Length: 157
Image 1: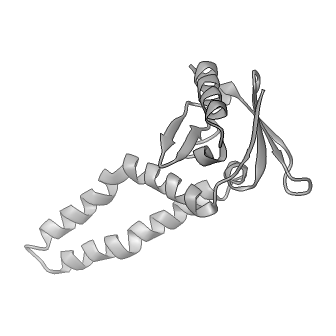
Image 2: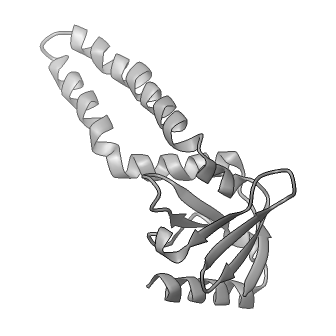
């Protein structure tokens, strides 16, 4: 069994989720901007519409993303200080008493793992854009880090 303490800040978690979301959906944000910018050649009012898309619609989509995906219990799993226990049956998250109820994530509930900017990201099967994020710096000992990564890859692969 591998055991260590970790958490990420709310800002790091939000940056990670937003960057994944925009990397997967960039076309839907860029297309209307280009479309209305090109139409502004014929009528200047389309430039105003393009600016409305840029300064009103895209930020509102960001707010909806925040409300829908970042205000969940699964998000708290990443940002609250916890002790992570890795075993054959899955990941157990032990939180400080009175903070949150302990959680257990079975291996089948994880879609995989990838590294993003010093963070180890585990996509959860619970719903879209839900992740367990672990900072690699929290696994200080290189041997423990290597064992943890190999064990997780073996269990999910």
